[in-house]
Image 1 (cartoon, rainbow over the protein chains, first blue to last red):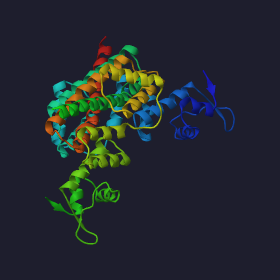
Image 2: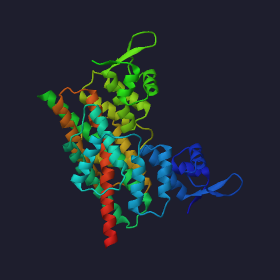
Image 3: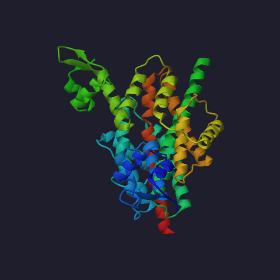
Image 4: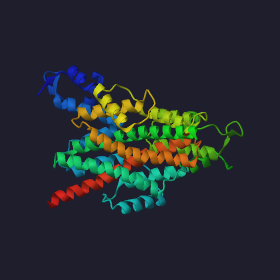
Length: 210
Length: 210
């Protein structure tokens, strides 16, 4: 295992020394092995942890309190992959505020149509209902038909993800759950933006031609 | 058109008066019609704008500077739907930092396989490459096969979205682009989390049984 000073740790993780020290102070990065009053040595596990923190903040766009919660779950070995993924995702879907009974009923009907087994209480259900309320309030109510098409797409990638983790390691831990599922969310969103740009370019060409 | 005082405006938008005043000061909400030195009347357009701000912050999770940029595009009538959507999405994908040549090549190969027409320079390309670098750095490199499956799902919903907007209004403005595409991103992400929870529950039941 490679042993390194703070400056090498910062270089290896692509972060400024001040940022690494901040994460140490905040307890997001475990302390190194002390080699004197003010010096410590770090190893590969510190580099990997910093890469995870960086991915969670820069790629997934999480705020520091959410990063802290995700890391706490990653460090808890007592949970199965299924439990860990549920905890992480529930933490991320949690939000303030209520949803209308109409939106909640629309979500429940969707879940029933698909036969999805979900934990109760389920923060995704409430978060999704809040999103539907916001769309309806802006005269863009999402139809059941739209939700079915979205759910088809979501389920296709979700089953692929879960099967991939299952193949890899039957007792895959929480870090797999976080990395293999959470960090693919921005990938899906970015691909949708690219595909929309393409579809919209073709539509606008079509209008000009007609 | 309904005319109302600040207190009614706050009630109609579901926000505290202090928050509405903050958005006024920040210029995110246009001023009302002054009826004296310290009083003003507001109307439906203010309610709608506050609902949009609330959806952008609470549902889409945007920060205030991103909300400001999105609203500026919504208010610019000179752009077509295609241009407006491009601008909004480019603004949201923009980020700091570089990506590795390997990840950029992987994205370019994907775009070529799908025949997507994208604006150049394209911030989605860079943002996606950065996400791929982060995954690779955490020993979860995304394969071309995974990207193809994700792109299939993303393209299915993207074509649906663009076709829906096209049907609705051939000269649909920027607000359609924002609401109809941006606010459906969290819907897709939440549905994926629900579908993963279900797939993972079925996998973990399967392991217990076997």
